[in-house]
Length: 483
Ligand code: NAD
Figure 1 (cartoon, helix red, strand yellow):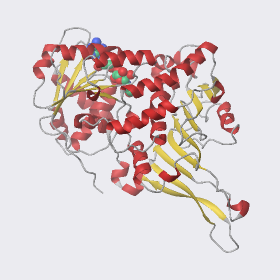
Figure 2: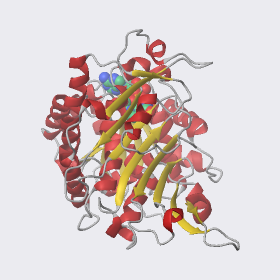
Figure 3: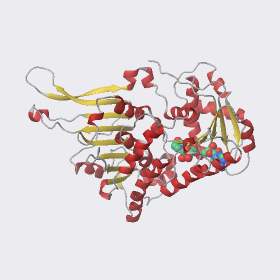
């Protein structure tokens, strides 16, 4: 199967923070892969912009090194790298001062799409937006891309939205949540809304509960100081897990159109029940054999920030009232695994008696081994009566789709091309982000007011024991955290 590459218009993409970690690991290698795929039309350029002194020749070397390290396995023809590097330029620029802006003005062209990627800390978003307009670098068709974290609470998110809205229309602002660019996450929508099979059952009448797990094996690593100010709630739940929850729970949009999809996601966030403390378990990992524990890693022996969180979330609307959503995410867990599992209710009557008691589970694996599995009941083979067993109807994308399934486009590549195309479907709207913080803020404030101390859990385990009890109280069990 050959994937179709849909061409985009020629563009000038300016990456503020073009020498940073994100540019090096994700943005530049991603653009290179799009170039190799033939999706970067002639006349398109990438302009790195950052504080450090560097010329375009040195930037090309920087980009070549980034691609060598993070470019992935994808084979490109000889000479392709040179062709890509020719499209790279660099300007030294100060987001907070006047240095370098006239150089950027000189470089930019009028007859191409202009996109500006803010791959810098959020404290610079307002400065960049202001200087872009002040120097006449943008028009009504220009786009800006902003990275997470989009605020650390409702007030800061509102302030960022206000700063950007002074200079840009909402349809020009692309707020990245790279989870939305993942192939399987988009497949959630395809599975739900492209098949007759699931949607009639997709409600509290047929669904017992839903589990969303994003487990990591790594600890906080070198990001300890940053992470300790954030924690799993701000770093993962408010954005990534909330987005997954929305895609699973939302009503079918009338069409696959950016605002139609985002309107439906927003309704889900607004229908979330306020959280009660005993529906949340927070955890911190203990030292492992070869790695420090959480508190040591962040350099604060009294830290109360969570590296793990599990929660039982309710949605008060007609579709979902009574069906809990269990969310969990954490670091230093047993396996790296992201998965959504829809657990259907038991048959209301089994003609096979107790032996026929069974529930279907639909599991959507985001990583690794992207794919979908549906657990179904069949007859156990062989003579000797009617015995039933559960088997997986298993579809691994890599197996089903061959090379295209295994060699999936990275989230950043897809999202950057969507920016150039002017398609906002996979980006968060300002009101969505604010609604997510409005739900999250009281939870965090509650922990702070109560001095809530996270439970400990063993490195390499499935999380704190209390998380098991959270489901056990409802006579349910978590799926194993397994690769
Ligand atoms: P970084 O510290 O590695 O790089 C920052 C970049 O910004 C550098 O190129 C630096 O020169 C530039 N910069 C800093 N101050 C500047 C100024 N005053 N004027 C002009 N340029 C300036 O940061 P990063 O890890 O690349 O992260 C960038 C943004 O992306 C942050 O908001 C971060 O939270 C977000 N993010 C990063 C990752 C990641 O994997 N690194 C993942 C998700 C989100």
